[in-house]
Amino acid sequence: MQKRRLALFPFLPLMRTFNLVLVIALIAAVLSGCSGNPGEVKTVPAVVTSIADGDTIHVKLDGREEKVRFIGVNCTEIAHPDLNIKEQPYGREAAAYTKNRLLMKKVWLEFDAGQRDKYGRLLAYVWLGQPVSGSAQEARSKMFNAELLLKGYAQVMTVPPNVKYAGLFVELQREAQEAGRGLWGRAR
Image (tube, rainbow, N blue to C red; front, side, top):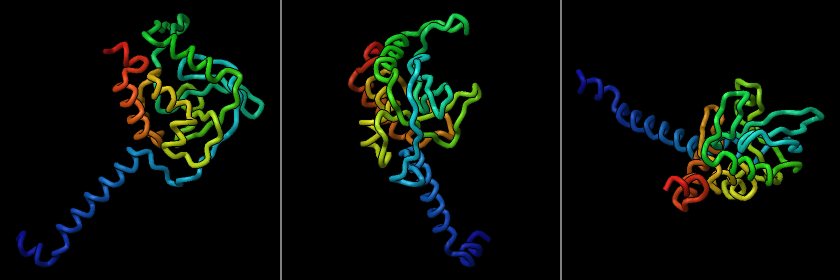
């Protein structure tokens, strides 16, 4: 029966191969941080008014105050006694770095598929200069989320559906680990 089915539909093995290649290509596109519209980055300007910790800031956006959580990265925690959160190693350094780099500065927020988390915080990629293409090279030089990873102040935390730069972020973390930067230097 199997031979007869193949004789009637000789293209079936080819279709299976094509489908497998298609699935692999789609996975590679997601992991590489490929966006649907290369060269187009939609952002909104904001001013950083305060720092909650290494990966969370408060901004003035369209005349209102918003809490913004950085997409794709996670810094270790600083102490929040009211929330029963204990300080973790390198949390204070990450928060100080974020404060030094962002406080009272103009930034550009880029949103991904999911705009808010379950706590109501805006989720964004934070750009230090207005992006033009959103390329990996531009993200390395202008995106603060990427900078935190490169300097070893954060580690990758991918939460779908916000995966636009996930592949790039994995590369940047690997670079920081291999160079022993930041929290990766303490782990050695």
